[in-house]
Image (tube, rainbow, N blue to C red; front, side, top):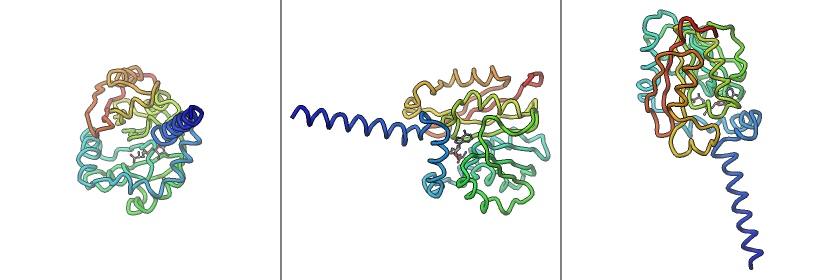
Length: 231
Ligand SMILES: C[S@@+](CC[C@H](N)C(=O)[O-])C[C@H]1O[C@@H](n2cnc3c(N)ncnc32)[C@H](O)[C@@H]1O
């Protein structure tokens, strides 16, 4: 009896560990290749799971970004971990946005789903396969760099943020998300409190860093690259 109970307990613990490693934290503790592979094999389900609400996306994602870019006639935006093209598609659909967007993601299947969505904006969108570190762009290049709902899945969020700060022009805007809520704590040593996350951005040369509550599991965090910062 004791043997069976022990076996059951062991199996339950193993199941919990596998669930935590693969489902809750999406493979991040097992390496970047697994994370990207998981996104590749589940890409066809991504938009269905997320059920993006057009009005909410325009109000909570496009509007604040447009506000930060309001003085620029043709801004150049980099969307890191663009996935199935969420941010570029909503931003380029905005009539008052006359800029261009580059979307970068390592998961080929996610990018493949972005292609038809972004076809109407040919000439103003470029999709490229790659990871957040290193970013294949020169320093001081973009008016805005965005990264939504992704940092916690990167091998090092700080290294990725450093790269984003590097490619931002002085005065350019960074718009990223910080994982929050109950599940965020399951990312163990990768979890940052609001204060810690803001400090990371400040130390990377960003000013006017501010956090806005967004969804139950994400904050939006904005910052502006310091004019004098040597990236
Ligand atoms: C939750 S999805 C978010 C996609 C999109 N930003 C959105 O909001 O719908 C996370 C994305 O991060 C990408 N990703 C995973 N590891 C990455 C890395 N090391 N560098 C850049 N992107 C990565 C995945 O391929 C996936 O498309």
